[in-house]
Length: 245
Length: 254
Ligand SMILES: Nc1ncnc2c1ncn2[C@@H]1O[C@H](COP(=O)(O)OP(=O)(O)O)[C@@H](O)[C@H]1O
Ligand SMILES: [Mg+2]
Image 1 (cartoon, rainbow over the protein chains, first blue to last red):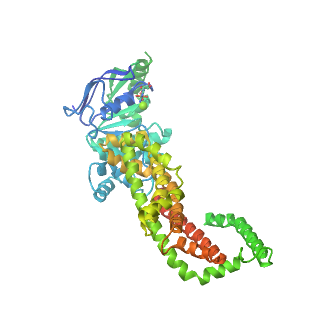
Image 2: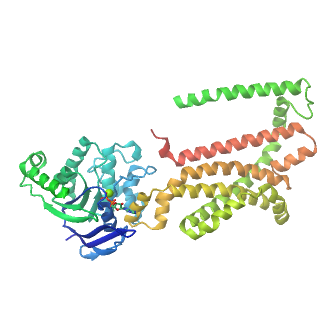
Image 3: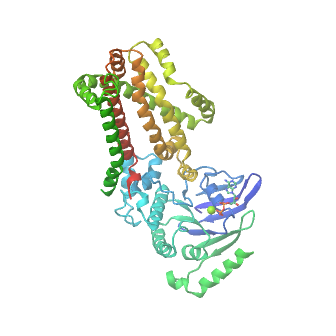
């Protein structure tokens, strides 16, 4: 088991926000966390990434307790958060610089991935010169360079228009299988969760809890073939029902 | 290119206005309405500036050197203090009110005291420059640090960054616009501050030159040196603006 969360509880000023969260992400697995806004998804991610320490519970990576310890799990926050004052390559190389590499080798290492992430030729530009889709790919590459181990993505595609989103999904599926990253991603878009993930956790209630879990079997179908299949619709209606209660 | 033309067009009206003032002034003293001894004509001022140019440049070099030393020292101290105030809440709480209060002390009033303490050398001049350029820079930096995005700090924290890395990669860069706003004021103050300090005594510098020509009632030279001080101040501000553009290159792209 790559990432494991055990009975995590957190409250803000006495009000419990999330309660008894248990979840796991396996090696190379893509798991979605699906739930309405305000249910506590970002709160949970802040704990998993080590930015916040939970009131109780544990976070384990490869069985090692890392509760409240930042720097191990890579995390892409809800906004893309590219720094406008750094060039694209310096933005992407930042996690390596933070880890103590010198600027030149960090840049070289970052540049090695530019082609794969569709960013060739953008290294000396500033983020304000990139399109929405490119910004997101740059942020994803930065997140990847941060740690190849486990990646948390908080609504990585929610700011994009429908067409760019579809293109990015297709690209993302290819890359994530090539890189074999264990990924936990937040979304409130059911189609997105079904398209991208191997497994889906549903989070509902106040305080937020994990109330259901759906494993997606694609039976060899992928892309459009899966999205137009009866299985897809069956999963979708099951999730809609689960989120309503 | 288009922008450059717009800038030149924008300068057209001020230029015309300035010409009118100069012509008015020239006729005022030129036709003897005001005695030439008291108000020299612009042409006389120009002539004085040319004939005294070598001497003036020698003095200007001294004043610029004092301003440069004071500004450098002031900048260094400002950065140290601003970073310490940002790092330790107690330092901020303790020093900020005091800093603001010191700004109500007119610097010109303490200049004679500095001369008494430090003599007629370069020390009181540099100290005065440090005092005048310190405040705008510290406040510029502190206000700038406050504009750092909380989520950006979270992100770096998640990457395992320490406080200094957060300062280096987030707080310092986002503080640059407000720092340069403060620096522009500090640069203007530092030169004039050095001149004022020189009024109170010394062997060389534009301020010393001013007191000398004042004693001789040489109004044309007085106006010439004032003109030179204005020109040098403008030049220094322009230089600061150029550095600002260079440092914040990301702001000039379309
Ligand atoms: N820093 C905070 N201080 C107080 N309450 C917070 C804070 N962050 C989140 N909350 C509360 O926690 C709840 C969950 O927020 P969040 O985790 O951002 O939800 P989600 O990401 O699922 O939309 C919200 O209802 C919000 O009121
Ligand atoms: Mg959220």
